[in-house]
Length: 200
Image 1 (spheres, rainbow, N blue to C red):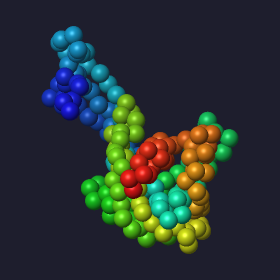
Image 2: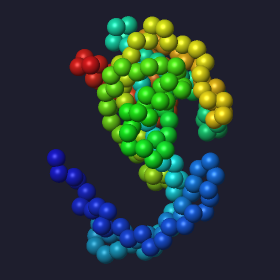
Image 3: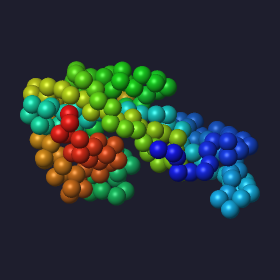
Image 4: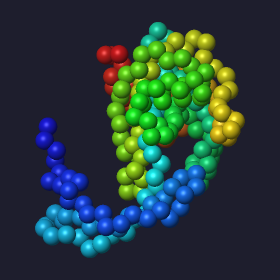
């Protein structure tokens, strides 16, 4: 299918980038102009962009028991809008410059859930919030035996305290429907599985 937009990268002119913060995250300030729908070029625009790098998220699924594995950990960014900032999520981690996303997925599954993954199925990738960050997430469904899964994991040196939950897919979808599960990667992954389970 032909792309809908009439524009691409050549229609953007970045005149400068400047690092304005470099800590746990990096923030760059971009100055740019871009083509306009009615012709011509925009006035110069300044935007601060969070440079996180790309990430991988994994939803382990046991087709024998029709169950999924989700992890629970504190997310301080949820404190402002949720009763509890301990979220149910997919296993996830930063790619740290690697483009071998399957290897990243396997490493994170071991670190965050003590899980050895069997077959990985690519679901999709998406831009997490392109108005403010360059981050793209790569989502995988992992076929795995979850019969012995459970426990508390995470790397102490990264401040991780992660609890593993295994539950029937129907329960996970119910928790999605009542908005207990409300972080993007997990929402998208569970919806993808619900739509595609018949062909897995």
